[in-house]
Image 1 (cartoon, rainbow, N blue to C red):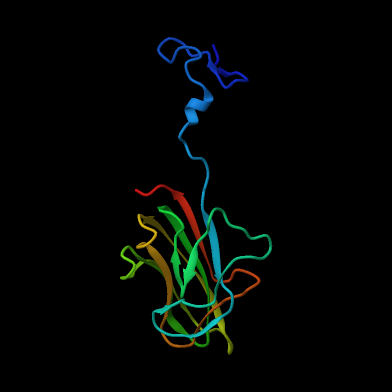
Image 2 (cartoon, helix red, strand yellow):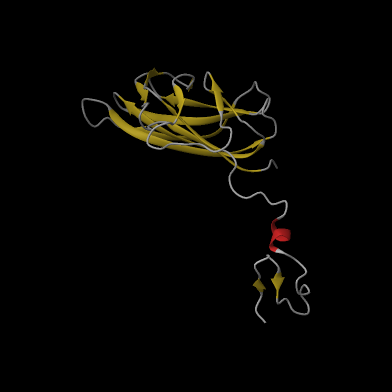
Length: 193
């Protein structure tokens, strides 16, 4: 006999060895289960940051993405001087895409996601790097992408920021108030572990 669910959400057709007929409803199956993503937010640099030096914290020029139909889910992130605060505890996916341009050849350029669990000491949780060779008399461009899954157990102590590192001082991190050239995503995947 096939298993069916009637208009009241009652499951019928379970045979011997399984659950008796009509013993569980669809509502029972999903009680206490939280569906979907409850927090998702995106921020970007709204203007270029020039003359980037070694291990520079991207502390200025952040804005929430707000053009071309951009939106966010839930309360959203807050930031102060480039330090981002989470609106709730949980397991969060953090992603950053960075637009890099240089005037000259550089052996390395990198973007890092730095986290703290004590609201004080930051460490590189993950980073992406590349080398860029100058191919014309003007700026040469590249892009970087990094991601990290962060267990946020305290919204007071668990924070995140982003840094850029380059070989020299000719680096530029691209920013644009009308589109995402350097941007970060914050998505709450579920409860804290």
